[in-house]
Image 1 (cartoon, rainbow, N blue to C red):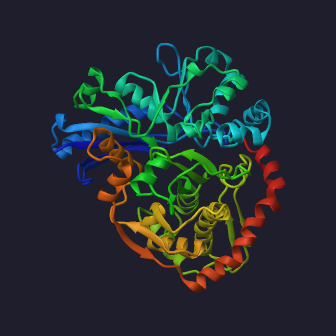
Image 2 (cartoon, helix red, strand yellow):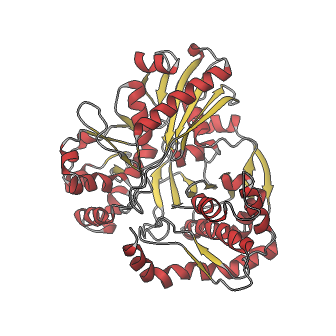
Image 3 (cartoon, one colour):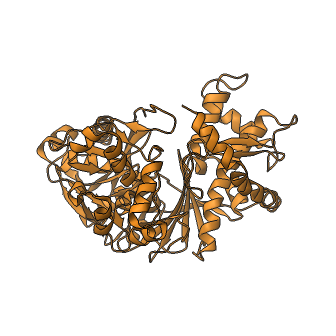
Length: 507
């Protein structure tokens, strides 16, 4: 039987899994690596760590599965979006890669907007406004701030595509991940020659673009030997982690929306045609589904906010030690009423993207009084994260995009309490899947399509993905959250000027 590998180059680690033709997961492995934060709002990583994690996890999966190298017919690649790997003419990495949540490029975003002829003109060219996380402003930041490095620059690759280069010896990306560079004409699914010209950048800096299921090459002899595979193994386009996760959740048709809470938070909805938010609050990207698009809202520190609260604040407090700290924190939060007795948390710990597009946004607790407890604060953190996702949902529905079903994934789908909270905040039932493996599973299915095991990704998802259960909304909690949400939405504008001032004081 043919087998397929899915490799997801994440922010905190790489996950690799192996599936058979039926979509059954045969084996999986994870490897972690660090993220550098040299200054507040700056994030970067060493691409060599991604490669080492790829080798480690592929070898672990092959070892534990007992699968023969020749049985692995194709590999699908996923990864954190927007990152910039800068290569010189000899394919040496020039400097640490700038990541999706790096906020250093506000000035370059203004430069791009101006060069394009304004925000509306830019959105017409590439379907999206300039945001600090995207790749294009990172390239300009290199030109403006590290001229020696820019002068040595020969290629700019996204994280997963740097791994592809190590696998096949070629520079290739695919439409879903390329959409998040700001260099792609999203409507026509090709690089935007007009924008590149306006920015004074050479198109040769960028890799070739393909559809997500297309075969981009086969393993080189060196890569096959290192991974323990064969040179017949294909590597397909794959997808950026958001589109890959949506494929893994079966979000490949109109009316289905996925909500994912990981380090970031994502609201992702399928579209059969390119649709726009004129204000640029949502992203319009190519989907990993051939000839389809999606709209997406992104919150930069969703699960990251809870991680900060539990591990930086609660860890080590009485009753909060050891590996059960998340379970203990959640139990305390669950004992508090919906709305946390009027306490709100703004989860803008590293700036925010949707809907504010503000790298200087900062987090806050608002409404604290003497009756609030540790549990109240934990619950308000979780509610603030979920309100941030509702911000995206409200924009999506206001554009008349149909949402008939919400599928939850990521850490927020595994916790029954948080699933219920999502149903109550969104006012809609939440669906979960029998097996939720995330982006690695989605690109493993794309690998199967690329190898010919399925005619297209829709049929692959239909054959392999099953719904497990549904969580209906609680009417009383829905009312409590509907009363609180307008207050939450107003707070950003109320505090924006103070956030800007405080951000300037932080080093």
